[in-house]
Length: 165
Image (cartoon, rainbow, N blue to C red; front, side):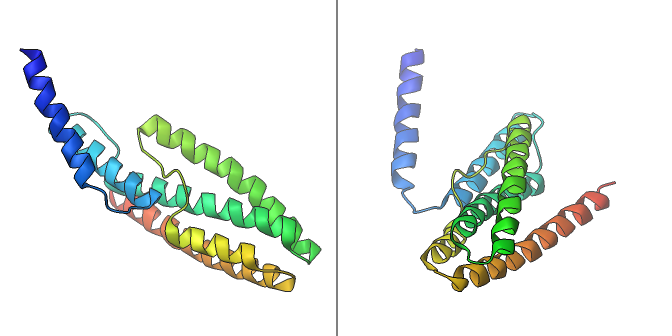
């Protein structure tokens, strides 16, 4: 009896996966997986992390991956020594932060992206094409944009957390 139930379920799952051949980047896939996990937990009266928190971890991981790639590139290719030093510090700090985010996500059952999103990877790839002083300028410009994004994301997360207290 169980064989008759399992076979149609496997076929249905295969069809759904085969039909869902949309090109999604790693962040979209992580968000989609986390949403499904939350729905399953809710349907089975199980505890799970809320959507805002899982989305926050996904965004932080996404930015962290891109920033370590940019810092590595700047460390190797920048012309101005203080930019290289800053890139080295960012690489070290963000690598440690990325590990903490991974540990927290694993503890909370959150799926993280396996690669930076397409838009973040485009910035990384653009930096890799630069030479000379253009590396320094592009890295510092991208870095200031990343800092503004992180500050905004963190502010929203703190504000949302404070609203629930």
